[in-house]
Image 1 (tube, helix red, strand yellow):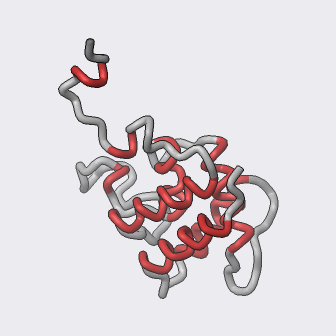
Image 2 (tube, rainbow, N blue to C red; image 1 turned 90 degrees about the vertical axis):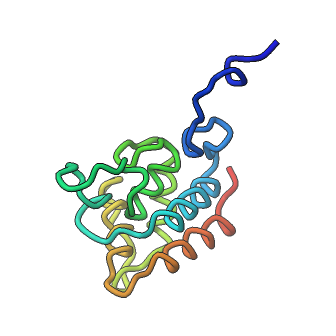
Length: 144
């Protein structure tokens, strides 16, 4: 007897597959690195280009995205939705990064997000360097 997943004709995108959902912070870093490698790093004032869909009709999870958006997409499938795991990954990454020789302010998750975004928005930052930082964080991260 087939299960409903075996008989379904609908194919789930990889980011929506239950088996693909990361359950650890290093897993989130790896998944976010794959997303950035595939979609590209977005530098700007928001998580993805054309947030309000005025010029683009591509789903947000397929657009270039900021590092924060990639971490959120890795856990929720949406660059605008948050989860406890994505917040934890953002916090752990923020304390690893320096912007102008400074660490993050510890006022809350939005300050940590802003710090990670500021690191990603440095003019010379490339997709490759962002992917490398996420992969390095995954390798040296806590596996809990």
